[in-house]
Picture 1: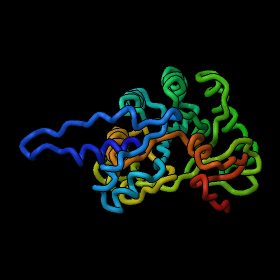
Picture 2: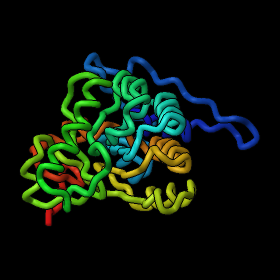
Picture 3: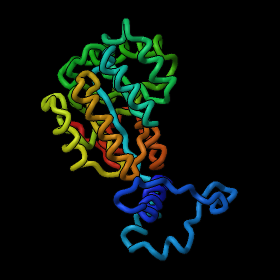
Picture 4: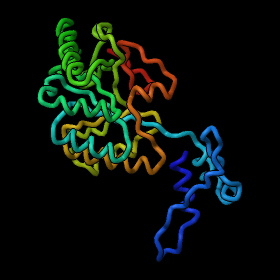
Length: 263
């Protein structure tokens, strides 16, 4: 709401077209002791119904998720951009990618991102034998703990594929996605951005890959564009907490409010 308020204020106090717009400082007296803000009546009276509805809406939350890293150059550039924008994300890490990149996981944790498990070797769990399923997840988790410390490393099954019998072996929640621009296939920043912006809704989980430079550029542009529309970027775990959903181990979620059916 605060971002939307600032946008509206700027629009209301625009200087003539030949001049530059200047941000309007909010009146501190409009804030209550509890930290909430009351919009001055004289401003409310000038707004149409649609703008007023947008202004008083609850914040819009979305989760950016990245698979298949870490990779030194692209993941580091992504972390730099997210830090500049104050955006959190969730990284589903391949265990075999961790050695030599432990510093990236340490940075993810220090900067408020969530780290998840994407198996050790990106194996298709749905067709792996049960012992291999357990081993792939365990090997990756050991490396994640060694690099980033203790934690609950939620699982994203490679390719999003898993059946009910193998899901019963999983001791953490599992994360699918609700927006997939197929960035790995497009390898085109503009097309990836357009695909996400055309589909995204509050509460969505967006799938991208920090392994590709085009995807990193797209992700940062997506953050810029959606932040301008009042979206806040949070981790998957935070998204569940915000929506009041208690995630269950062995359940595959497309969004906090949507469970992916297992075959």
